Length: 401
Image (cartoon, rainbow, N blue to C red; front, side, top):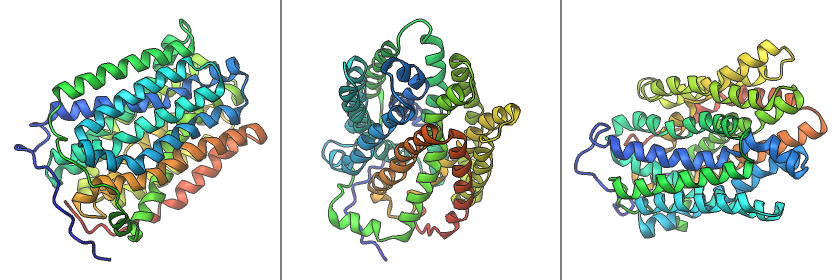
């Protein structure tokens, strides 16, 4: 189906290029780092929260479902806000909202209040991606889109490293609620620096009106991209959410040691991420996505192994492989519709992909942990990733910038 040409609202900066806009790109990375840490910090804290609040694995894993409910809901409506106040102000609002909600969650006196706080954390985090990706892409020419999105993805990957290491450092000294309060202060600082010093993003997004939504969701490649994002998000944030609980309760490892292992295991991914943009621009997004899903699926299935040596190797190798998935899938998603529709396309795909990978999958793994074994869940999901590696070749990427 041929898409109609939308009203031109895409902002062209005076000077394009990664070097010319590196300060703004790094500020975007910082905001993304914070909103991501605020979402995943509950993973390394989960064993302590379980013990303190007397929760079972399913109840604890539901934390990620509540975050994802807020996240995916706001993804759908973020276009209205971006079309109203612009991408730059939307990004600042995301940082402030996540910071405030984290404080609310930290001081919540009941599980119900904490869950409400988690939903608002997700709402704030859901504001960021469509505006952040649109802003980062607007700073460069299309030939460098894969590269700038790879740099942008340093935010969540640094978050994967920092969250467990922060907990490993702080938890022996302060309570988990105090850890959340410190994270919220970090967010307020980063948000303030962004709104004062950033360039770019001073343009408005496309609102998710029915006509625009219909044009995008009528594309088969949209649904294929959403399924792929769900698989990749599950292989990244979904498994990350549960691995510490699995290693502590099912494999009997020390909590502090587990957080250190999980944090260090993500460091190698930063090196891989440096090459992700080059690989996408050199070999194409479809080939890169397929290779990542196949290799990461094998590593995920290996976490099921009873051998301690294989387990440790798999825990280190799996994030190293999956890390390059997101620059590739986001580049592909940005090219299934006209560039002006980029923020709207992303805001429609994210709820589907992250709804499953970031919310439903951790809950299912938690249920398996209560009723069977976590290990069985890792084996099943590894096989799903392997099967999904054939899907990228069905994508039609007609738009190239």
